[in-house]
Image (cartoon, rainbow, N blue to C red; front, side, top):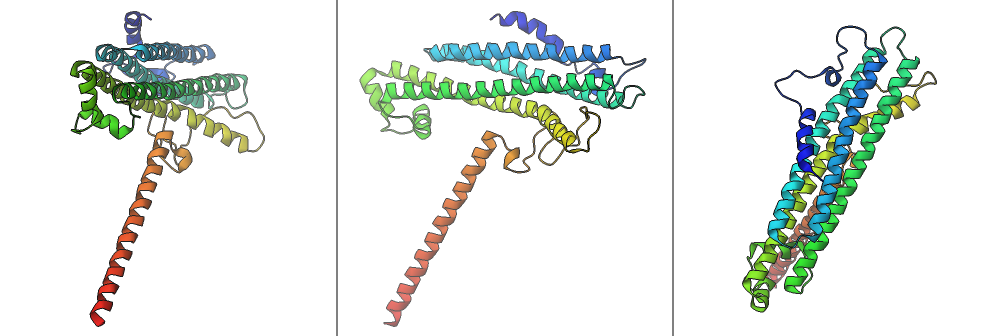
Length: 321
């Protein structure tokens, strides 16, 4: 895929900090009547951003396929740079979509206070349907990138384990890979591999493993940030929809600027952990590991205390006898 062609067009989606925020981002309607045609045009603008994000998804997916067949550190470095560039563009575009989507929600709320365009009117229902469709598209995009992150992690892990086994004839562990890259253990399998295959080929393989590992960590970090941004857009919409269903029967409840509940931050902002349901996979994993570490530490401390008490009692008994 030609990245040069996309880079040129991408500039129109990146906000110039010297320019004031557009009406769509602030929810302002500007002078004159705000028609349904204007609202629909702004919705189409967000859809164009979504198409650009989908193109970037395709580019990152394509780069990941190339990474799987890369044979040396130099090729890995080039592909790693391409992925990082594409993912940086994805983050910028997601933030832009976040601003525009929030502006649409605010513009819709303002229009509901206009005579003839309030709750239950045909215009109100039409705007709500367009916003809801955008929200569904954003959720779908979020799931696509989340699936890509899982796939990339799986591919990288399998390739690293395969390269490690080819060098050492041993099964890879996180600690073993760290030691292999750092070359800190004098009697590590790396030294034996050098004796068998020569220093040059082995060090080339180690450099490739290092690039793969670095690429995986960078991609994971960026895609987790993207997930948080998109989740910040999608979650408040779902919360408002659920709230609307719980209300007394009446006109359909269009999307309004959400009153953020505990555990859900503003669109694009960090999602605060109000409980296990507010955590993403990485945060849940980290918290579980912390709980396990605390439990192990408590067991060790209790064991040491019990041992000391036994020794003390034994010394006292020996002294009295």
